[in-house]
Image 1 (cartoon, rainbow, N blue to C red):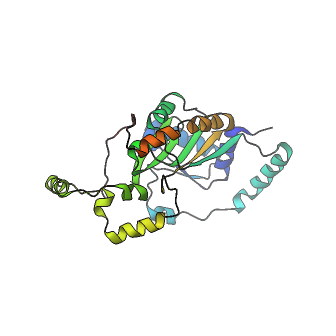
Image 2: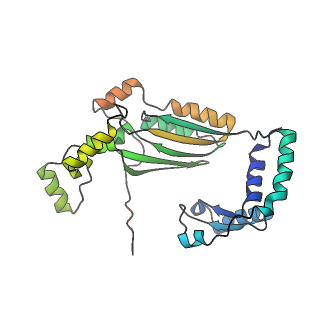
Image 3: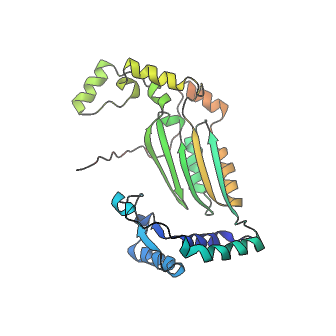
Length: 262
């Protein structure tokens, strides 16, 4: 008989020596303490920390004690015996989408606002949109929350950028802006190196690619995977993109640049 997701989470807590609670900015202090108390009830000896966006000082990570395999040795044998009796199926699916095509921005937005299943617990990866085809977009979803952010530029997007003319450079300098168009920042040698690196890649998309991993209850996660596949641009839409056509894009356009401080 399948163990179910709840049993899997409990077993993970039982075997852990350190648990990091993420998304703490989404909870009140009372809710966070309630979660920590529930985890402590399962495993009283586990160390629990709350982190935001994975931020934790390296010194704290380096100071963590080595994993104590002997402490969980008896528990491991007990669970192995139970698995032999009932099988190891837990009903959890881990599915991968790997496709060079872009996702249609409007269809993707509609999917997330109307059809995101509660039993798809986690999804993460990279993707691209035809309306923002120079940007590497990072995808991070947990339960009903989705975070999409630009984390860099595709090589194909950099090479596809037109060099800014003299008037554009002067306007940018006057405004105090930095020209970030890829082609405008590349030397001839840099362009040649990029072209060489991309010569064996997809002739239409270059290094652009959608790579996502979905984790959750099998039935709903497989359904979500199928719905996501329907969000990929069709051949007609890809042809429109190649010709410079526009796409309805309801995703936010405002950006925030973070700078390190001393």
